[in-house]
Image (cartoon, rainbow, N blue to C red):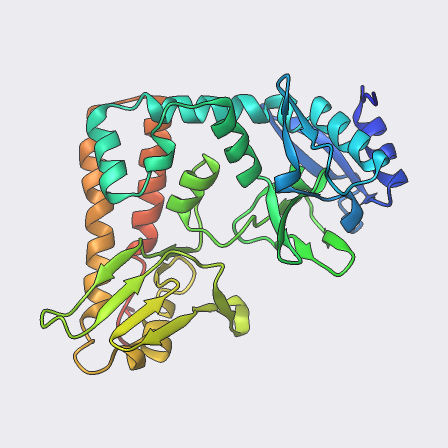
Length: 342
């Protein structure tokens, strides 16, 4: 059985499999592990060849070790590397414990908070008692990438921490790539999420650029139209300047909208502009108040959650409150017209 005792051994084995790890090293700063450039004046490159990625469906636990299933289509060399890698870091070096701690903390929340998270914030899957299967499922969900229409785990590169405004991992024809330059820690945007979904999906609070509406089913008072608003920003149309527009599907009197941006920390005019340019024309006459209604509904949910959390305190409740504040900051970062204060 392959075994690693140092980062040098990990990177050496990774490179033997075709991986690229140029001008990078691993450090722990304030109790948090990260990937850093060896020489900040030079570019870095991290590349995981496709043959070193492993499908999320091809891993399981054996005696609390993360291993590759026997029938998985991987080479013996990749199997040995993947299992030794996770015995050295990622799963065994804090990953499992961090997820167990987060899930236990959510499960032990006061009933008043849990009831609201279940009824209005779709937390049902996180409120059940943690099991080893649930811990593994969440571990995989926080460390996977869509590559060629398949969710895969990508060792070494997955150790890069999240940065809201940084470049994302790039799925290429040959594998998964991240390259560029950085004066300090190397970061990558994990996926399109807002502050609230980042907390729910990854277990930490972070200031994000956009706020996406929570899922809602909305109809005008006369019931002439059914509007389904989802929170699926991965279903998007790329626009210039890094903007994204939702995918909209119409069928009879029903409209499905993959997401709606309801706040923008960088440019508060963007949400209304995108709504008017991309969505309002699909809703038809009488939809002028739709955006305001959606914004109001989103703000009220988070204000209610903060009110319910008032008087309680724990590390996870503090993080939950922080995620709420971050989300409300962006939800209030919108304007509707051309009047600019001077």
